[in-house]
Image 1 (cartoon, rainbow, N blue to C red):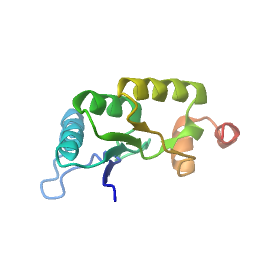
Image 2 (cartoon, rainbow, N blue to C red):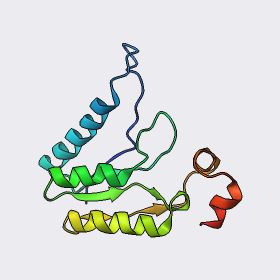
Image 3 (cartoon, rainbow, N blue to C red):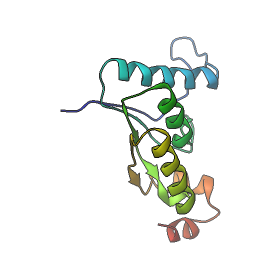
Image 4 (cartoon, helix red, strand yellow):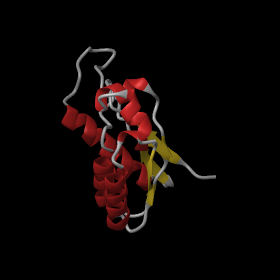
Amino acid sequence: MKFLAITLIVHRPDPATGIQKPTHDRFREVLDSAVLAEELGFDGFGVGERHERPFISSSPTVVLSHVAALTKRIRLFTAVTTLSLLDPVRAYEDYATLDHLSDGRLDLIIGKGNGAAQRSRISSSTTTASARV
């Protein structure tokens, strides 16, 4: 059995205080969680891609690159990469670079996304986004 920690990096106010911490602090928590996951023996750490609130995980390549720099062993997962929203050549290049920088620890998981909520924020039309799938 393998153990994987996954985050979509939710960023919303604390339910008890109503205070929302700075974005930098939320990212730092995610990075600290990845380091802790490795220390606890987890097999992998995954970052999903989302492009609407309350998520701040619009660039898993950047976050996972930082995780790779802070860790040595843990596998790095995309959970998932919404390829229909990305330029496929750029996605290939970015993830190939991440895989090289992490010494081959990347596992790329690709999905089409969750529909109109993401497409409408990034592409000018549903037809354009669908044509890229």
